[in-house]
Image 1 (cartoon, helix red, strand yellow):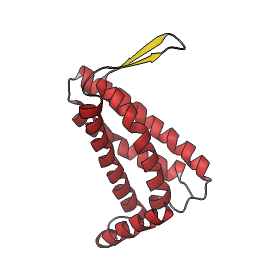
Image 2 (cartoon, rainbow, N blue to C red):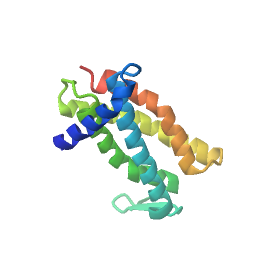
Image 3 (cartoon, rainbow, N blue to C red):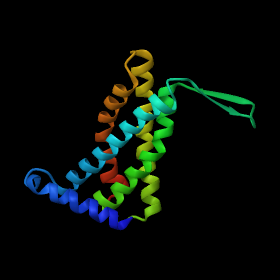
Length: 164
């Protein structure tokens, strides 16, 4: 996996050269990695919402507690896609963007999960607001919310999760 990270880093740094007078290298790497992970998130969300969940309510029966949980299709899609992009985002940030952090990997992961949990909350309540109350389509709603969380995520990852 380290070799893949080095290849990705070399490609990003090659593309970075025309921008080096305008954008710090770390910010550029974050933008490319975060942008790639964001596009992966949108694609997986679209596929999950439209072809896996299929616009239907999703029911979970918790027989141990005799409890049934019902998720709307846009929230069920979010729950399916979230763990995938959580792991790819952490891996890209740790091994490509913020490589100079001296914090232990387990601590980084826990901090990363904390920042992502904040973003997940914003995503959840944002989707509820935009889809259920304003009647927007789920995929454009998800894109708008993600654009908002980019700022929170960068600052949190740089100064908290992967600090030096």
